[in-house]
Image 1 (cartoon, rainbow, N blue to C red):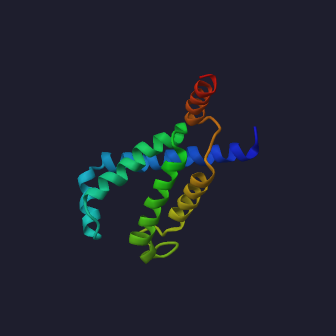
Image 2: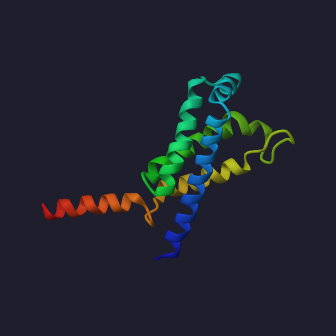
Image 3: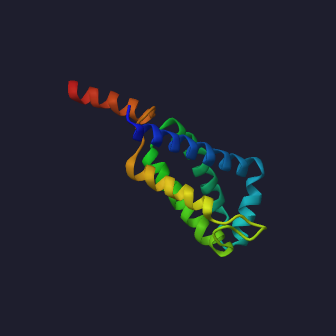
Length: 139
């Protein structure tokens, strides 16, 4: 087992748990509130559902290693949107009332890394694709 894969697994699970919790909180706190907030910053309200679902479902998928590259790419898009639309105006460290974009930037970097490199260790993808490969080679 390579150190690289262990490190990537840690990043994948951490990112997945973090996004899952963010998505869960959006639904638990009342998704309608998030819809209203999206509209107040000039975004279509329906996007709140999309972001929350990407975070919730994508978080679970990332933890179990299902579609890690695709999910991470979606997370990267969410982070780019959050940084540009909300956080950039308050600065890197924030303004005392709102956090800055330093953490969002870290999540963006992790997301891009996993999107580019994948994560195979303890990933459901590996089990599914190995089974698929064995069927095609024996047929």
